[in-house]
Amino acid sequence: MLSVQNVSFKYGRFSPQVLKGVDLQLEAGEIGILLGKNGSGKTTLFKNILGIHAPSQGEITFDGEDLLKLSKRERAKRIAYVPQDIHFGALTVFDSVLLGRISHFGMKAGEEDYKAVEKLLEDMGLKEYALRNVEELSGGERQKIAIARAMAQEPKLMVFDEPTGNLDIANEQLIMEEARKLAKEKNIAILSSLHDLNQALEFGDKFFFLRDGAVKYAGGREIITPEVIRDIFDIDVKIIQVDGKKVMLPVT
Ligand code: ADP
Image (cartoon, rainbow, N blue to C red; front, side, top):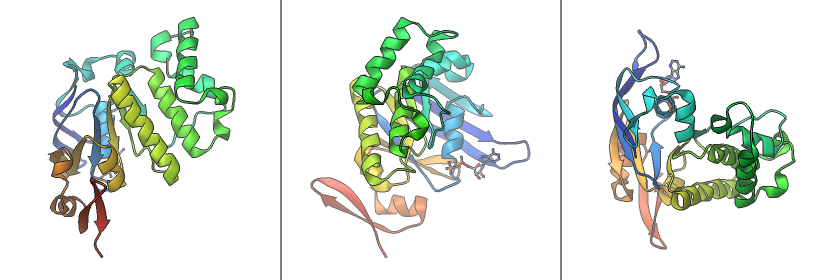
């Protein structure tokens, strides 16, 4: 379980406090969606969880281990990061994914690593792409490779920063379905930011709404109400049920 407790952070001594006592808990196999306006601190929180920044106060643990005390390599075995738009350089798909295993193999990849990558490409329907140059693929395909690379780390937690930001609707759906498969089949915890509230409603198990540097609302779908959305985003929405699912509509 990921546990973020009372985490505060600011970028410089004289900068404003960006995170002010953030609390968040996410279990294995759950998809947690982080929501908040631009500038509310989502990426900053991710970077604290990933160990890119160290909180000035608070604790971040995973399965009881203090993430901040782990070496980079040990952390990479537990947490993988999927950024919004990844540029791999002129590598083949196979090598791009193999790089995800660097925290396992260190200097030189072995038979086990090659086998693991082959299996991953097969599982994710990417086998026929293995020898393609990753820079020549579409945004959606590249995003899938980024997930495959993160998976190659064999992490217990995956952090997605706006994973569908640059994608068309079909690829958006595909990436989020891939994320759901990982969470449910491999029991991985996934923490993701998402812009699209309806996509969040469809794929999230837990929701964390950031405001003023803290998680103001946390819980399951039931916490998502027009009042909460107004408080966080300053917009009016209507929530209706379609085929038993909650759907949000803007009110104009
Ligand atoms: P979000 O991901 O929710 O859009 P960010 O975490 O990127 O929000 O930003 C939160 C706040 O921190 C913003 O006010 C932003 O200006 C500030 N910030 C982000 N990165 C830096 C940085 N490298 N140096 C100083 N301030 C930063």
